[in-house]
Image (spheres, rainbow, N blue to C red):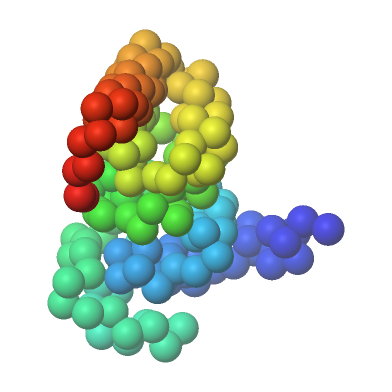
Length: 189
């Protein structure tokens, strides 16, 4: 059974979707998202639900009805914003904030599930490429897979060049380690 069907996101009020989306962003920004950021998989559903909303108000500070305490560091929205503008702002915020490396694979999936403009897609791919150096070797295959799926929407060359550059960089590190080991050079990191 699909969790989204159980939650009936399409029946949630706009302000509830906004509050849940803000909770996810706040958790990501503060590093409180657990389980590889799996909860973030709901973000595209919330944003899709809001996309057709003409006008809404986003509580930027204080407490919202879900009893989420938003701090001064959270984003300040205009008094009146459309659902599409809100989605664009959320995508920009995702690309600007620091992520825990454990959430990178899920965020690649989140970007894939969102309908993005060409510019947003390029920004998202560039942000994801910057995450490569933060990932462990076991995380690389699923992350690269999600990145390649995302690049199917556009900017394949940027994605492929970034992936190739990363693996060239890794290869250089391995080659240097082999050379150092061959000559008995010990380097403390």
